[in-house]
Length: 172
Image (cartoon, rainbow, N blue to C red; front, top):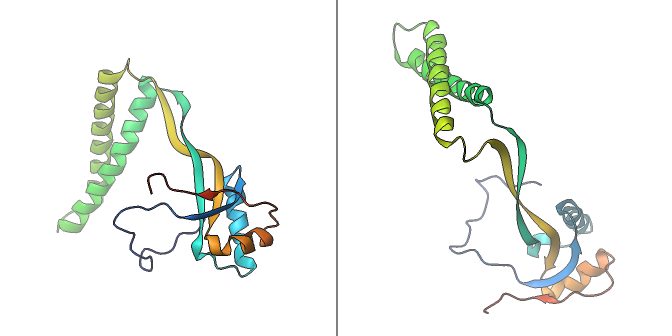
């Protein structure tokens, strides 16, 4: 998936608006829908009026592991280490008589404080959540929506037999 540079992107509308048009085809995965749009591009179809719509969104939380005191302390130390490195580099830039020992000292102090804060935070919320996880929102299917005027051509280019119902926005 490619996103245009922020410098050349059009400004988004003040209020998000669902695209209108005909559902040309429905796919199980985003990759399949993306391949269909790529095929339309290769066949010189004007894709500025094409949209990939995710249907039936689901929130999925995948458990990645168990939280332990060691894991919490290690993650806090690493997080604090990065913050300490950042402040150490700032000290070097803005202090006339600073040396590279400041970076090491700031990194160690940052790691220590990061570990302490992470352990304190875990101690306060320990019985509430004892696992790590990642969250994502996924769709169960993906529809290719095309302007009604060009939907027939898109269908023929993608070798889709029958038209699907026109997508309507509720309340309009």
